[in-house]
Length: 209
Image (cartoon, rainbow, N blue to C red; front, side, top):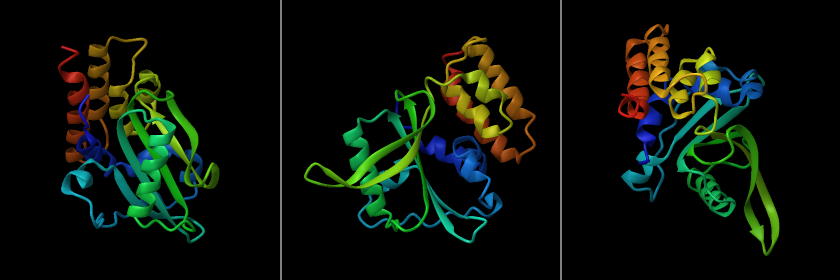
């Protein structure tokens, strides 16, 4: 499966509040989700390709006055613990995220990894064999998740993401049809419905016909 981060960015950016309600429901209750902002991702040394294949960085205020950084990375395949540690540590350095600022970090796996949403931890700083700093983050394994559950959730983003999951009660062709029907009836801007439908077609369009 090719790296399709631009497709994910197209649906994640307008539906970040949805994403947080799905992946970080406990934290989402304490955030002003209508005040999400997108800082300029101008990282020194990053090529245009690296900027295009990186996921999403956003900021949102909490109800206690703190500014929370949201980092979402999309990976085509599950990473080994060592690979994941190196990559996440590099993001923290490149993005100049301050360790004292609250960060909600999540990794979307298109294939592999534990199904569904899971809390993970990884070291990002070590001295010999001793961990000096560990970070906690969520992983969302899409491939092994149950498509019907996410199609039945209230968030339009969830319906689109279910296109990468395995339906149990329906064929993939039927699941595609149900996804598109829910999206067509969604109470969101037309351009956002178009983006969600385009996402579903990208993953279910050809193989389901």
